[in-house]
Length: 322
Image (cartoon, rainbow, N blue to C red; front, top):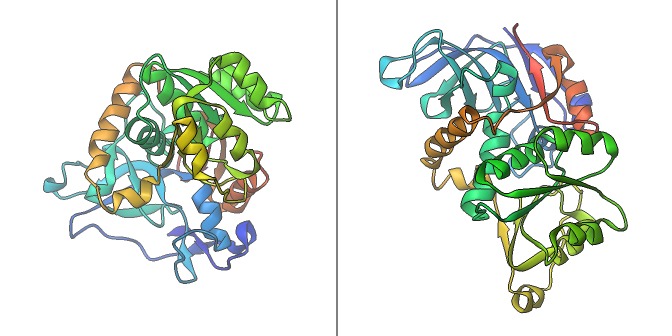
């Protein structure tokens, strides 16, 4: 079968379409015909050798997808023909055998391509905002990178909670995207972005969802209201900032880490409840993933380049089957 592998740690140029043996069900695994596979920032980092996990080359690419069940044991809770989403290494392929615990129902309201966004992006946003950030209805949420895959997910999860959402984006095109996915206000990142956020929020924001960090981090801390929470999701800005903890003490703020993948190693059971709550948000009309680009499997390198060049909006997916 066709699949994509990372053959060299040179970013998009190091991935290639290859032939791989057919997977098989068994040992509690669910055999899935993949229709769409998600492309996310960790995929780019893995292809560059910059992710915390560094598999031995060559390794199968992709960590999430959506499709239909081909074969599953009755004890798995899934049936042949059922639409599902799944996680696990090697999702950029025509078929995948995923552990039953890594497979979840795909809501009927969503397309396969939208389903490919649910696990990495929306589970991360839900975990970061609700469990780690303690976001509550009526609070003000600031989302950096709000037009991207995880940023747009955070906007929609924030609105589902009942928060007012301020999006920080890099250009007018992305501001339009942030508005489309539900942001109440958009601010263009630049020299005066912090003042504009203060003008919109008054005393500051209650929660910041930050997958960017980098050189904007200090001003992001300044954007917090007393007892505000800054939820660190990642470092797409390219550098890992430092913070003098006296600022945390005297401003009475929280700096919170939200590493969804690392947390699953200690609390894997969180995923079922998270997914059920996201399905509720889908049914209530708050969660509606934006697919910004859908490319065929053989263009996996181009999909990664969209992320590397900061051109992606919404979720980038690989279309494996119509």
